[in-house]
Amino acid sequence: MRNILVIAFLILLFISNSVSAKVISNEKIDKQKVETASKIIAELQKDMPSYTKNGSGPFVAAVYDEKGNLIVKVANSVINENYSNNHAEMNAIKAAEEKLKTYDLAPYNLKLYVTAEPCMMCIGGIMWSGIKEVYYSVPSKSVEEITGFDEGFKPHWFKEFKKRGIVVYGNIEPELGKQQLNNYMKDGKTVYMPSR
Ligand SMILES: [Zn+2]
Image 1 (cartoon, rainbow, N blue to C red):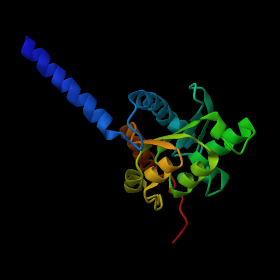
Image 2 (image 1 turned 180 degrees about the vertical axis):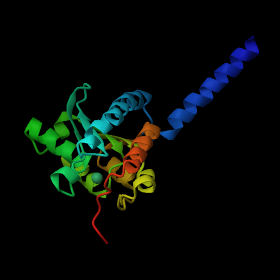
Image 3 (image 1 turned 45 degrees about the horizontal axis):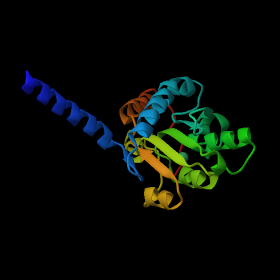
């Protein structure tokens, strides 16, 4: 009996380690932050079909304050608003700044949650906004493999964000996110890109 308990404990330890090991960050991993982000991102993933049905997506972002209150939740609207810069993160930042009537979000200690790793444009947008923490699900490499979107070049962005006091966590709940992107492709939806 005791051996069985020890084995069960070791298996559980292995599972919990392998789950948290997948998450990457530019600070020491905070399990509480990962747990909160997992819940929020899973919600965003679940909401995605309602957005893509109306021509938005396939990416959704939300901004929360430090107490865990939702400030804004929006999807990518490149296609339905005919503007190539309307990525979910850019839309979320714009909506949050409009709502709070400020161009500097830093004093609010806000957190941005998004269903995929920010592209090179959104990294710039986040840097300019004063967002303090970024949590994303599917890494760019997987987004590019599944969809063919070009996420750009982002050398050492975790390190560069750290220098600017911005915390980043990535690869949170990526399986559900990948599934949503696969569905987007299966449905024959548009991969909006400049023609080359
Ligand atoms: Zn972007």
